[in-house]
Image 1 (cartoon, rainbow, N blue to C red):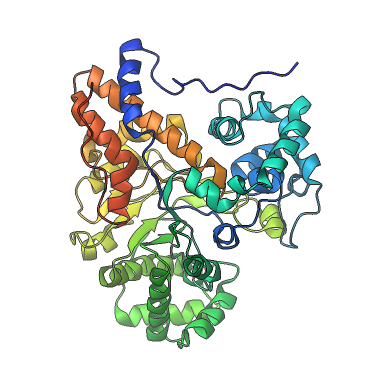
Image 2: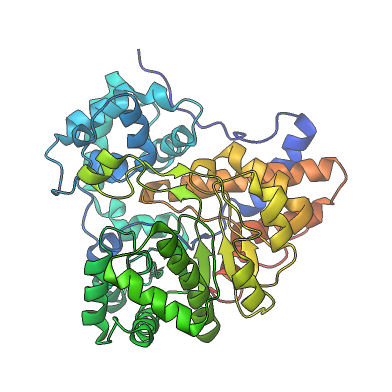
Length: 482
C-alpha cells in the first residue's frame, strides 16, 4: 500500500499557536517574492542549450551530493547511482539507480534533503504518493514523461520558479562559452557567473601547474612573473564581469590572510611555481592571495565570498576515482579573529569593499563572526552553509548572530546548490524558518510585527540584492499588516 505525499502548509512554523499565527502572516509576505540565487553551482549549459533533462536520475540524483553521500555511507557505490567518475559519464542504468534511491528514502528522515525532495516531487511534478520501492518506476516514468515536454525545459522551469537571478560558479580558465551563448540567445533569464580562482591560487590543488599554464595561454600574460600573474587575474575578472559576475568565491582550507612585503611575496611566488614548497608555504600563498583579491575588488567592485573551514575531498580514494565535490568535504575548526586581521587591517574600514564570510564551524558564530561583522564595514556574514543549510542550522545561525551583528550585517539566503530543481524548495525553507524566528521576537514583544514584516522581505529579497550588488532593491516596505 502506497503512502500519501502531502506538504503541510504549516511545516517548519513554531508549534506554539500564537507564534505560529504570526509566522504564517510573515511568511505570506515573502512566499511569492522572486528568488535571488546569488551563489550556486548549477550548470550554465542547461540554460544555454535549453535541452530537455534526460531522466530523473541524471537530473535529481547524480548531481546532488547531499543525496548520494548518504547512500554511499550505507555502502551503495557511486557508480551504481549514476555519478560520473574521472573516466566520464556513468554506465549505470538510470532506472536501477533511481530504484536504489527509492528503496532507501528512509535514510533521509529528519534531513533537509527529505524536505527539499518532497517539495520537488509535490510542487514541481505533482505527485501525491510518496517515493518508495513500490513507486520507484511510477516516479521514474512520470518524471521522464514530463521532462520531455516544453514546460519542463530548463528555461521554462527557471521562469516558473520565479528566479530573478541565478549565479553559477566557474574556474579561472573556463572560457565561459555557455554564458556567452545565454547572452547571445536573447532569452530574458538572468544567469550570471562568479569568479572562483582556486585552481591557480592554491599550490596544493592537483591541477595547479596545468591551470597556471592555461591561465597564461588564455590571457596572453607572463603568469610566471608576479606582475603578469596579477594582470592575468585582472583580465579574467573583467571577462567574468562581462558575463554578469558581481562576485568572486574562494574555497580556502582556512580563513588565513596575509600582507607580505613586495620582496617576500615575489620570493614566495617563485617557490610555489617551482613545485618545491611546504604546506606552510602553500597556506601563506593562499593567505596573501585573499588580500590581493580584496585589493582587486576595491578596483573593480566584485564582492568577495570566502568559504573556509572545509577539509575538502577527505576521502582520498573517492577523490582519486571520482574527483572533487563528491560529498566528502568535512568541517574543521576555523579561526577568524586572527586569520582575517591582516586583510582587515589593510581594507576592513573601507566601505567600498564587501567581504562575505561563511563558516562550517558554528562555534565561531557568536564568539568571532558576529562581533567581527558587527564592527567592520567591509565584512558581512554569509548564511548557514553546507551541513548547516537546514532548519536547525538556520535557526542556530539567527540565534547566535542576531544580537551582536543584527540582521543587516547578514546577506539573506543563498542556496549554493548543484540541484536546480531544489532551488525553490531551499528558498522556501529559509523563508519559513526566518518567519518563525521573527515571529518569536514579535510574540516576546522584542520587535513589532510591522518591523518583522519589513525584515522578512529584506532577508528574502533585498539583502542578497544589496550584498551582491544586483541593482537597487525593488521591494521596500511591505503593506500594512491586516
